[in-house]
Structure formats: structure tokens, C-alpha cells
Length: 118
Length: 113
Image: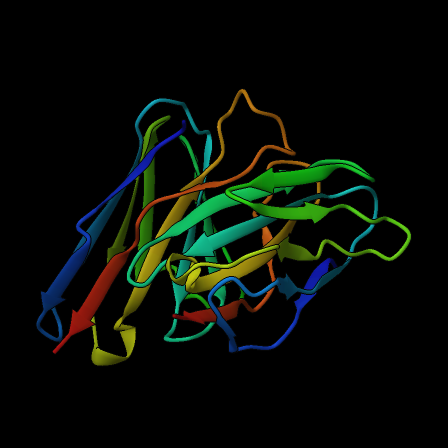
């Protein structure tokens, strides 16, 4: 089946530093990937839509200068949390839909990245 | 806009009990419907899906039927196991463009031996 690989699975960083999270579709191509954030015991909050070769579309309230998204190829999107602060600590999950699958095909999710900012 | 409402948790059941997690949706057009499962510390895994009315999705003993007349997609399993303990998310895809899924808030299930 379709696999989305997300790396790293967990990271601890100091306040003020930046962290990059990678999301790769391993056996399919994805023109669009979606980045979600999940707080403890809560649902997923869509942060942004990552479009291959163009700028990401951010949801209202998400700072685009803080959460930099790059989708340089059909199989890779990256999320960089810049100048991280403790309130950015969260579980970040990426997802992708097979470009050949049609709009009613499911999203495939990475295993998430647990970010802890100290 | 489109939305998904699922029953509040947590739900605690004894092993081999019957499970129902209710899910209703609001959408224009004809969405596709999904159930995802999230085990502790992991991402989401697709559990089952249905793309049109009266379709039944099934996997690992779980079932859900797309009911257009009641705009529902309730998740059921006849006999739960301890290993089914997880958070379950109902979701819809609007079927109009390459759009993200709309998720319900999730229902935490704990199965005790």
C-alpha cells in the first residue's frame, strides 16, 4: 500500500532554534501534501496545503513565516519550524494523496513528528 | 461548510463487547467517507472507506455503511479486543478538488480485558 515516511519521529530542540521535518511519499507521487498539527487528546488541525512547485496555502491563524513549507518534488515536502518556542511543542503529521488516485481517494499519513521545544 | 460530528469519548468497553461509534456529516455534493485509527504515539492509518451512498466499508472486523438519508457513517465492530484501543476519527473528502480531509474530533476507545 501507499506509504508516507515522516522524519524525524521525535525531536527536542532549544528555544530559538529551527527544526525541519521531512515528509516523503515512498511509492507514489503527490502533487499536494497536507500538514496537520495535533494537540494532546485533540483532533487534527490543518495547518497548510503544500503544492509541488508553488507556494503553500496556509490556514487562517497559521504564521507562514514561522512554519515554512517547501514542496520541491512530487515525493517530498518539508516543514520548517523557525525560531521555535515552547508553545510550538506539538505533534505534527503530514499526509498525501496519490496524484493518480482521484479526489475521492484516501489520504495517507506519516507517523508524525513529536516536537518538544525546551 | 463541510463538517463531521462524532460521538464524544472516551468509550470504555470490555473485551468482546459490541462497539458503535456514531458519525454524522454535513456536506454539499457527494463526499467520500473514511474512518481512520490512531494508535498511541503514531500517525493515522486508514481503517475503511466508502465512496458512495449504501457502500459498506469493512476491515479488521470493523464496518461502516454510508447512509445518505441520515448523513451517517457509524463505525461498528461485533467483538472488540484490547488491541483495538486507540483513537478513531471519522472524516470526509468533499470530492471537489484535491482538498484535505475534514475530520471529526476523534473518539478514544479503551478496551479492558
